[in-house]
Image 1: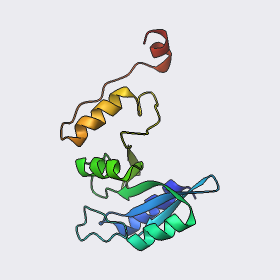
Image 2: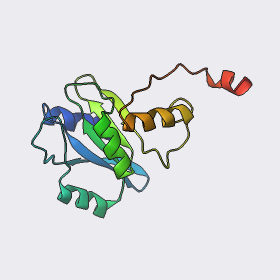
Image 3: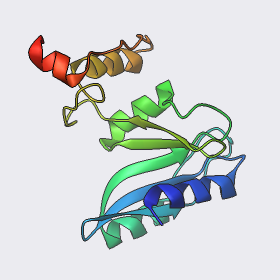
Length: 148
């Protein structure tokens, strides 16, 4: 079972509440660690400190995962702010349709064309400050290399 499959199963189990978990690196394999959600509000999550400590004792924490059970997996403004604070990538799943969203900290992200490139850095910075900018259709990589 992949970490994504494990996270979706956990999200389905926890719905209508948000699920939360951590990704750890165990000898080069990415493993999902389901965590308890301490939040009272069904639209929020707070990872149980004991679950965080246990995951940290097992291996390096490499990302945070949570669900949006009744909405798009696109990161909310709050998701973006806390992703930035955590300095870890965030993966967000909608357990109903299995779609995924992702949020990366502004500093330290790897440059990937159309995923975490210069435009997404600018867009994400503005989103942290409450201004949502539209994405734009980028040319294929071959076109970009020919005429950047």
